[in-house]
Image (cartoon, rainbow, N blue to C red):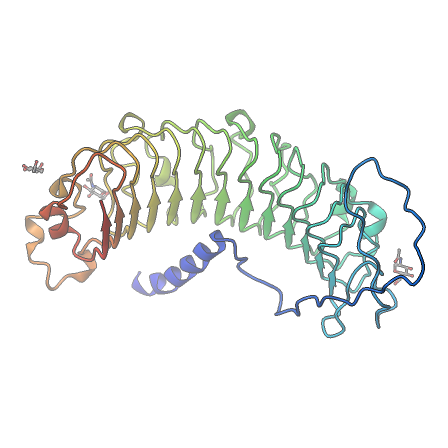
Length: 379
Ligand SMILES: *[C@@H]1O[C@H](CO)[C@@H](O)[C@H](O)[C@H]1NC(C)=O
Ligand SMILES: *[C@@H]1O[C@H](CO)[C@@H](O)[C@H](O)[C@H]1NC(C)=O
Ligand SMILES: *[C@@H]1O[C@H](CO)[C@@H](O)[C@H](O)[C@H]1NC(C)=O
């Protein structure tokens, strides 16, 4: 048990950093696209036909590349032939992607669709970044042609539903900040390799999440449904889950034993919901592998029971009036006085936030007696 935890914890910490926005795996270090000297036109350019929108014009094409197939509006680094940089160029259209490309950067443009012709030869693609564009819909004929795609990033677009025909090898799917209110049946059912699914800042409501929505996601470790309009906990979350993020929804209750289904769950975020004591069955969060629990900005008045593995607890901005260290101590405080030999059993809590409640210092002595590893209490 101990040895298996040894690898588990660094792994979880790594995953935690994923949550902060860093991908678990990146392709090998890649050169930053250099700013190319822009050719200065030597004679007045003809007026472009005016567009119905006031979008800024695409940047002028760069100098010819050593790769004859390099689209002129993009940059092909000579020392990284599998990468194509077309990001931040005010593009409206996806250029034709050469077949040697594995890593495609198209973020920060004004792209509205993914044409089949552009991706005809791009079957080697492993990574596509389309963040911050204007895509409304993804033609499933495009995705069907990308069997090696492992990372698909489409944050900040105008999608209204999760794209269908997602490639089976997908490992990360980031769709935050769209307007997704529909999840077509079975879209995730074959994605056995999917590790991260980010759907935060969308328009998902309870009726969209069916009991088979997440079925088939055998290896899903991080599910982010924060900033939607859920009133209920999502049903049938995959049991492999390590991180479940549900901040800023309207969740009022947690079904009895909900988290018991997830033996690996280590990070729960439920800040900014409508949880009250009534909606929290007694041992909801008293689960053995939980390391970090966020419950701030709810309507909780009693500190919930925790296990002695928990390391970080956020309970700030609730309506807690008093706290009894003896009652919330995961160990029996009386029997636990002989702690010297048994570090394993000392509650692991190191960080506790209680500010924004109706509590006044000092911190109760029995709290400090119980949580001997506490490094910081904010009250
Ligand atoms: C696709 O690849 C084939 C073979 O490499 C090539 O002949 C063809 O011109 C390519 N098509 C496009 C649209 O680039
Ligand atoms: C938490 O769970 C453990 C093990 O299931 C149990 O022994 C303990 O009494 C629970 N804590 C509380 C406060 O109920
Ligand atoms: C805290 O709870 C314990 C056990 O339930 C009780 O004996 C004790 O009097 C309580 N302490 C305070 C300050 O209320």
